[in-house]
Amino acid sequence: MTIREWIRYREISGFPTFSVEEIRLTFPNYSEQVIRNELFRLSSRGILYSAYKGFYIIVPPQYAAKRIVPPIYYIDQLMSYLKKPYYISLLSAAEILGAAHQRPQRFSVMTIFPKSSVSPSKNNTLVWTYRKEIPSDLLLSKNSETGVIHYSNVELTSIDIVQYEQYIGGLSRAATILEELAEKMDFRDASKNLFVHTSIATVQRLGYILEEVLEQKEVAEVLHTELLSYAKRFRYVPLSPNRPEKDVEKNTRWKVNVNSIIETDEI
Image 1: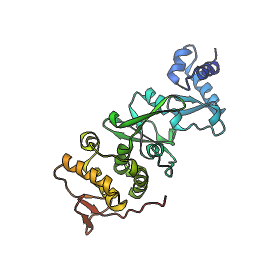
Image 2: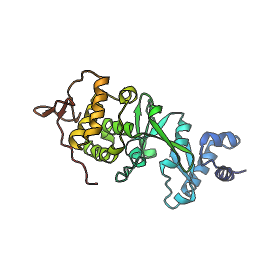
Image 3: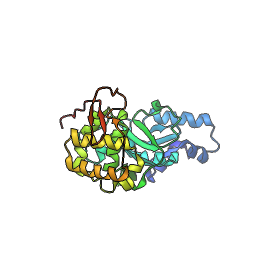
Image 4: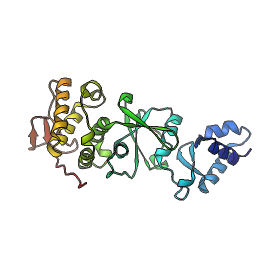
């Protein structure tokens, strides 16, 4: 059996990905150079797609023309290969949740520290963000073409796009996404499960945007009630952590120094 035949057998058996280590174990008599040359040749022909160091996707017919496989096709297998928990996050999660006007150019994945040592240029379609632990009780799952994927629920997505706004284009972009997701938000019991996975400052910023920018009074009221039950007192924080706070308007309800102008896109 050749490497090409082995790959074909995996494909028809329903295994769309593999690692270089699996090749080494299957073909112990092949030198490292022979394996490397064959994988390079098959990648050059568009038969394989290298999504990560040592990890390959067998390119299915529907993606053969572009020779690029969307991450949602292989993300669960990749994270199993990396032995790290994950969830699809930020704009990518928002799109799955129904924010149809926010189709991202890159695919956002949240996982745990330590950060990857692999250069982002290896696969620039992936945006990696990190947290100490993955809140599995705040995740949703759905079937993909190749298995099951995990993504953040509406409330965790809302928190993440404010907390990690630098990865999505800023607070105005965050507000636009929140506007699309607002009718699905339910922050009841957030003080018991959601807030432990973020900062009080992030909740304050989210609440301010929902109430003052988007005028989502009911959603904001629930969030405020939960915040007060979680933190009896909280300090003033800047709306934008990256801008000066001198001589700015203060929002006393959320204790936010309004040092940034937020404008949503027309949907």
